Length: 607
Image (tube, rainbow, N blue to C red):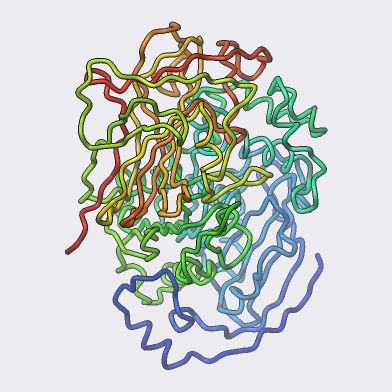
């Protein structure tokens, strides 16, 4: 055990803080002033690499940041797969009257055992909670902290439910591993699951902390998928296990994916998310399940959600997530309100639930969203919003291929008996990923100009005329597609876009459906009858955006978004072992009998 001391200036409890603790009305921004937080009062003693025993005898290296004062304190716990050394300013929290417990997870960095993604986090987290509760410096209350995988470790142990847990504040995370981390409605989440899971997490140290010599375009193009890890030089048996279990409901996912167990969480939970984060859909689903189904009335009432215009990288490993840049042609500026200081949001939550400070957080509405376009924060009482008017916008025109076509988008239902658009999907030349909800490799994330994709003939483009008045879209977005293919299996993709007056096409949200899983991701794979028309529902996740006057609403339909998602090879073979590619003739129907459309969650404007 190594010891060190980090001096922190002692600060007295100010009169301004005392006034703030009497309660304040909710404020329409996502910043919290210093006077709402517990003050810095203590010097901090650091104990390095304390060995915390797990039930199977493995010990996990844990750093303790302890206030130098008599008495017992609440604990804040981070369980970290990226290395606890140099990760954030833990003394900042400890100086305010918390014991910070920062632990390397099993098999990572200084901890013992072997790391297997997700497998041991529930049990190891529970055992750590019990250890903390028995320490002489502990008052028996624990707050869980962290983002991304650290957020997952918090969710896993919160599901286990140690009696010592009092609250959780996390960011950009979900407990739905299957359909949030590895797959997306049947398609492999290639642009994240492979570089993060197979390469970055391969070994004791997180490899992206140093440059990784991987030629990503060449690797992503490699077939079959099951040997991509070997081709990249990072063999990973866990990655290959993921490929062998492509369906939800497979017993393989039972003890690591908590989409059904999330309602077992019984403590107040705050989650920070981003409209462009890869875990957005899962976090929204988690929120609904906890607020609706938790057996704890306290957890149902005090599940809070903050969603900003952030990509994943904006809020995971630093204290101030920024509004993401949108390239390559120019940047989108969401304004100064878009950036928040994560640690202040975390601390205000933990101050109330672990220390009993009346800072008003429990009386605020549970949902706070950043509305893009208007670039403003707003409180809401629920998700999805109760006042939503779900409105169908139908595809039309005569030929929608590329931005040079005349594809239309309108609330008027089609009257034609026969109308369709066709294109050829060639998996050897897929539509490239241009931003969106991904991270952790050279795949771009966040808002990007979609014009380069829209120039392709295998992308169908449907647009409204320029809007005369503002139109707000906030909530879940879905596309209903009537389509046929010459292939035995194929993919369908959809994207919602805000077209600015200068032509800049800002992606808002998108989704994919693998045709063989059209009956649901838990259903057995069912190949297509070539030429037969099927109805598909594509989940585009969610967004919040005001389409301003002069802007246009646009929908893109295609069959690939690569390498965010793996390519469908169109042959009907196993997607993980297949190497043979075939072109597919794709047809989208937009007739009176088969009215393909998008459903937008319209929010009535206050006059």
